[in-house]
Structures are given as structure tokens and as C-alpha cells.
Length: 354
Image (tube, rainbow, N blue to C red; front, top):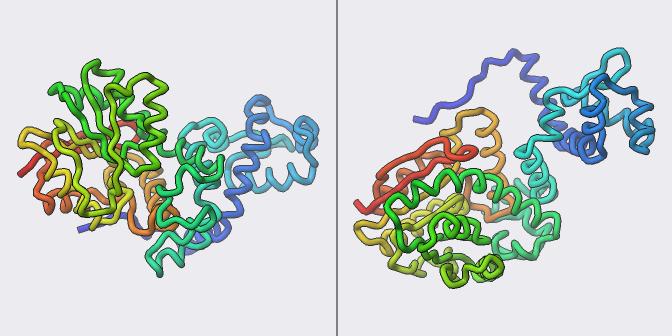
């Protein structure tokens, strides 16, 4: 049975938390302005603190503008004031310099912020209603490379940040049995395939993805000179009748199944099983919200689920591990091994045919 969270706040504490939620979109923009306008960076450089007028003068901003942002920053706890001097806090430091925080914040602003106005519509209609701020597609993946430049840049940075940390750590596990052929299902821009090229000089990889995605992957692969070892297979992965190519020793699904509803996940797992030989292995790399070591990770994953609801496709989420394990079993597969705390916050499941 699922158990998580508590209700231990006093009434006063709970009301304060409620106000933080009520004004969260406003204060998010204040934090972003403090970062983007250089205020946090300046306070980091001037460790002894600066007055409002000094900050305004140094950054060529109005005293009024700096004042209202810094006062919001007090409640956000990203700055503090002492003897009329503004100082950076630890939270402010992470907001400015932490790569994970920057990636998440840019993803929130550039990809999610406007579309989240339509979250209720997404829930009631079962479709990504917020996606219409960018274009008329059924899913974000269909129009990914038609997104505005900043939105695409932030989407790719968000997607790659987590996998980039995980891939080097996973290579010895993937290659311990010397697979000759790997099928990367949902290969996107080819990052994993290219990582494999660097690790093993003989392996061949097939990237399976939507037509628009494989075109971008082919461009990246050609630039790196690996077109002779990486090929692509374009297909609609939402088509439950579309079989996956056979012959792979390893089938790789990284940050992929969270992009689908449970019904679609089950279909994909069944199709993976159909493409497997008895000695083949299916590798599933995901971030499960119940497997997180830190509360911040769980919080981030719950928020990311709402991106899937409102922007990506209207039907998927960052899953609880129990959901995935049930689907794996239902597909006729079983977990062979499990590796926790990979990269930032991933779990790797290796699966075989029952």
C-alpha cells in the first residue's frame, strides 16, 4: 500500500504554506529575474554585501526595480539584508550556480509556464491542452523540432541533463556481456548511441523513434562519423501493431516509458518481448518518484508529471516503481537485476523473458 507524506504542520504553518502556493507563479518570475538580471551573481561577487542603490547603479537598473525584486527575494530566502546591505543566501547560490536548478527553471519557464494555464482542461479532457501555445500537435514529440528556439533549447537541456550523468556510469553494465547489437528505442538525438560508439569499437546500434526524431539523430551521427555503425528505424511507437526490429542482444529504453500511458507502456513491453531472443535483455532506465533518496528529487518528479499531463501527451507521468513492475510482469517479462541511484536519480531494471 502506498504511504507518503504527513500532516504535522500547525494551522499557522499550513496557512503560510498555502500562501506560498497561491503566489508561487509570481515569485517564480521574481526569482528568475533576480538570476537573469545579474543581481544574484553580483551579490556572490560582493560577499560583504551591497546597498540597493549600489546594485542598481552597477547593473544599470532602476532603484525601484531592484528594490521590489530584492524584497521578494527575502520571502523566497534567496537573499537576506543586514544593516541595509543585501547578501546572498545558500538558496540564492544554488539558484544562480547549480546546473540542475538552472535546467529545471529554464524548462519550467520556456516549456511549461504558459501552457500550465490549461492544466485543468488537460485533466478533464485527457489531452495535453497546454501544447496549443506552441502548435497544433497531438503530442510534443511530433512538433519537438518546430518549438521556438528557447523552448527547444530548454527541452533538450532538461532531457539530456539527467541522461548525460547516467550514461557513462551505465556503460560497463550494458557492455559486460559484449552485445554485438543494441536497439535504442526512443533514441531521440542519438546521445546514447554515440556514447556506445565511444565505449565499444565494434557494437552496432539501431535507433527506433519517430520520423522527425531519427532525421535529427542521423544528422548528429553523420557529424560524428558513425553512420556505418548506427542505423535508424522510423516508426510510430504509439501504433500497437508496429513491431520492433528483431536481432538485438540488448534493447535499451532510457527515460522513454515515462512518455507513455500505462496501456502504451504495456504494448511497448510486449513488442520488446516479441523482438527478444531467450538470451536478450531489456534495459529500462527511469526515475521513479518512490525511489528517490532526496525529497527535492521526489518534488521535481511530481512536477515533471504535470508537464506530461499538460504539454507532452496528456496521459503519461513519472511513475511509481510498482506501476512499472506490474506492467513488466503483465508483458511476460521479469526483472533480472535492479541498480539504484544511477546518475542523478535513476533506477536501471534489466529484464528477461519469463
